[in-house]
Image (cartoon, rainbow, N blue to C red; front, side, top):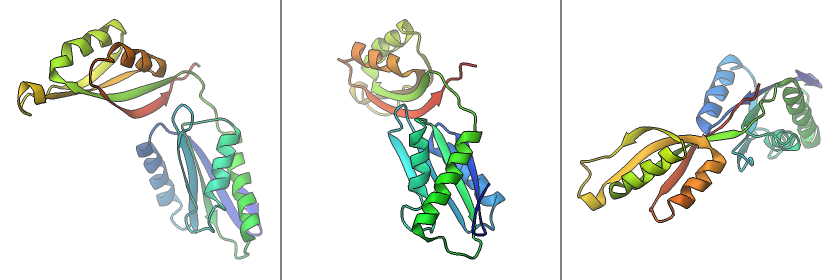
Length: 200
């Protein structure tokens, strides 16, 4: 907990792999600290932290979420949510004071949190034409890529209109190889989650 002029800043860092997990953690904090004035946060997702968001939750623009995200970026971590819950102490801190307070609170949370290191795996959703199903399945088998929830949607129309979907799990670099081997197949690839794989 970080304190400044009577205000208390409770900070939390969580590993997350998608926006749904972010929502779950934030809902938990809002219920637990329902009487707090502000629930500010930032998160980064993806191998390079390309998906991110900052929220000031009623604080002046860029005085909370941006400093929190800055601490995440400074440590070079991704797939993380940092939330700071503020109990107002009755004394205004000013924009500069607020930014420093949220920066220190976020730094505390990250310093006290463990770090999971290792390769990143993804879950992707593949969509392709029914006529290409054997080519796709052969490549997945050859590359030892696991898949589940295959849906061949046989009631969707004529042979040429039928689309298949399935979810595939694997290392990110393998998906690039998979796409290359299936370059003549019309594929739609959507990333569902990016998950750190622990090397403990």
